Image 1 (cartoon, rainbow, N blue to C red):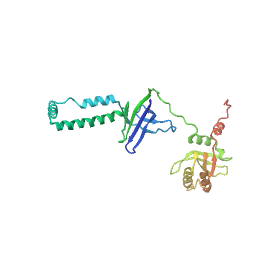
Image 2: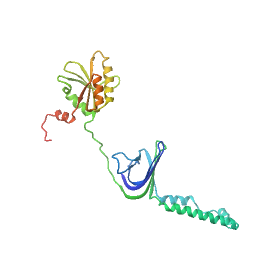
Image 3: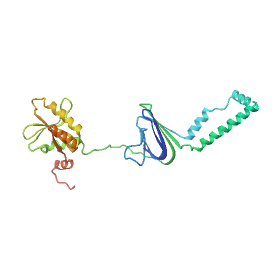
Image 4: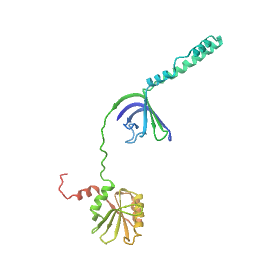
Length: 278
């Protein structure tokens, strides 16, 4: 992992054209050649980036100068002869040459007024024609770190965990409830939990971390299909989540579904009856 703090600008061209003016930013270059640009503003999302697979080329003024010199080889005898012939031209031509020299000098002064960048990163996507070019004017810090192999992120409280604990504590949906199975199949995919309540009626339970209207619509489709099975019907629906939006509650009630708020920390605590210090 290479971390560079620098004054830089950037231009992204391809499917979307975008640019960043010169400012102090952080450049992150990963081992897979991807480059990300961060600023003090925002949180985790970079201002611009080029994701792998891509190729990155680092160019410095010295490299460009060397390439330029190689491209401009020494003049040939024919070119030298033509140059001498031009030097022997009339005074009017000499005067025109002097004017041109003055114009060229003025242009060179304007170019020299703009400082050369320390380096330029050209990152090209291997899947498209997209190119990200980052011009670095001044480098404050340039460090490389070997982060080693990352074990990955372990998430706690995801939908699968909620499903596991609710299946193990199925009476949270009502006294006398029994579990039929998790991931009960339907023609359009499995419903999270199928259970039988204390009255002997089947209950299809859809679980979300944060319940919204989309989740209610999903449960509606499951219940409609399950009620076509004479061995299961009537099937009622239950929408279970850690949080449920007011709009989702209204829609669920209108569809005849029950809503259940899941307290994940409490569910984890009742999963194990052994004594705990913390």
